[in-house]
Image 1 (cartoon, rainbow, N blue to C red):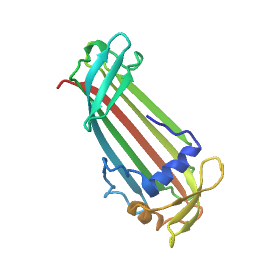
Image 2: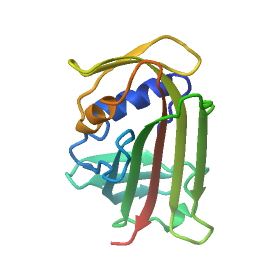
Image 3: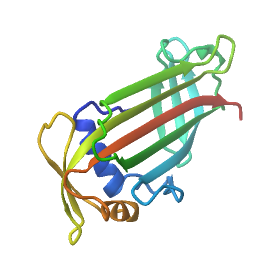
Image 4: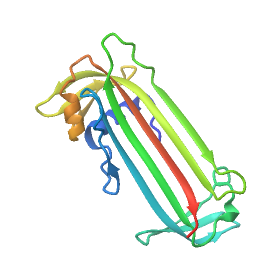
Length: 202
């Protein structure tokens, strides 16, 4: 799982929200219908499965075959994969992934939230089927420098003023969001990502 670092994370987050986030064909994108007009949100959920076709117990290697027939061999890190001996040929590895991006304009005069990164992880208890999960959230506030509604281009400065960025807005949610933006606005962006991996019997 990937996590962006500040201050570059804010550029990636705003670009993703306004432009191409949630564009994978295998995902289910769900724009928010309850957000206020000045807010925007997109989210996606992905579930993927692969079957265990062989195991090398000594080397902790597991060979998987996905639903399209492609195979890959992965190493089960002892620090992450507890109860490795319970994995058997024929088991299904299930990966569930969630990603969401939200943006809102902060009130005039309000102090922007400090950039933050929050991470968390967990794994199966001894004796249970192997499973693990990890989640993270990035929060950052950017300053809008210019809004070109004719060409749908937004220029902004990330936290710390490390140079302006520009994004071309293509998503409907993003185009609606920038209608109310003006230079000087502070936009708070929240990016949340989580993944869960589990082994299920056939």
